[in-house]
Amino acid sequence: QVQLVESGGGLVQPGGSLRLSCTAAGSIFSIAYLGWYRQAPGKQRELVAAIPSGGSTNYADSVKGRFTISRDNAKNTVYLQMNSLKPEDTAVYYCNAHLSERLGDLRDYWGQGTQVTVSS
Image (spheres, rainbow, N blue to C red):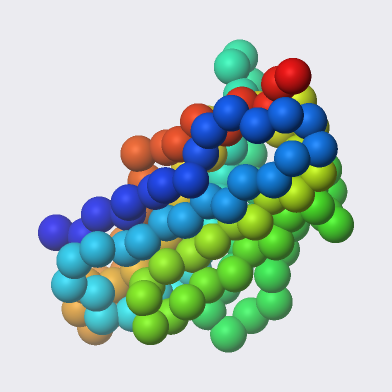
């Protein structure tokens, strides 16, 4: 069974940086899409950044120029480099993947979430 394992969250001061990682573990045939979402208290979950297979990256306006999403296909891993962090970036960050364990069986998976807190 496939699992998405996240790491890299924590507490950081405004202006600081963090790097989140998410690895898809298990028997994987292909990964079509990888993305990062976040959910702050009292707010809906929102897309932060996405990197489709073979496509261009996509960012929320609020993080453009500060965050960078990348993927290592050999490791089935997606990264989110977060620079110039602001208090409003505080949220639980979730990894999302659209992947197949076998041909023609595309499914949606979510990580467990990792807390990012930006505070002085």
